[in-house]
Image (cartoon, rainbow, N blue to C red; front, side, top):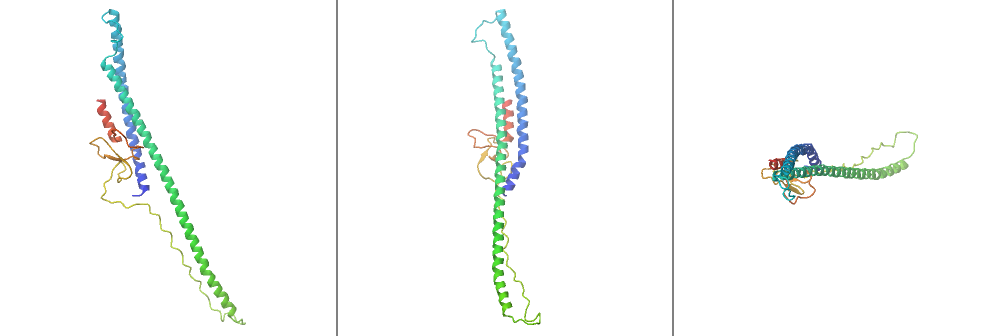
Length: 245
């Protein structure tokens, strides 16, 4: 499959991938708001309990001991983790769109190269045809002039002058079309959202149950291979739901 089909397949998969990422970000927002509300209520209640304890004398003032409970602190850490996941997902979405913009730029440059190559080939073919026509016409004109000079002039018209047939000028065959498509083995396995064969750098999803497993880095918006664990857009939501439980 040529570069045009690859680019078209990649662009067609972009809306669904963006919709998936935006849906995950909305779910993270909803989860974060719920955890924040619970944590605010818990912290407010603990502050009230400490105030009442100090006023009644049941609690001795000690700055080292006056702190929130472990549950409240853990909820705050969970809020930070959700916020970090949201930022990572937003960054991934941005890189995904940026990668497709770069692919579009490459596609436009390739089209311009093809256009220039076709124009150059057409110009060469036209120049060759003109040269062949000129070369064929010169001997015929010389021969016609010699025949006219050698024929005696008489008062009768139409005798001694045979009609001449115009020579057919061989034309240059049209330049062959530029074929950019490469042969693809029909038995070769395909990967990624674009359902294409393996090419360039690819990244594997760390979810053992991932249905696709391998992805082209350009299709998933990854500029360089990740150093740690990486989950594809389809599996990242599943991982977040597991962490949120």
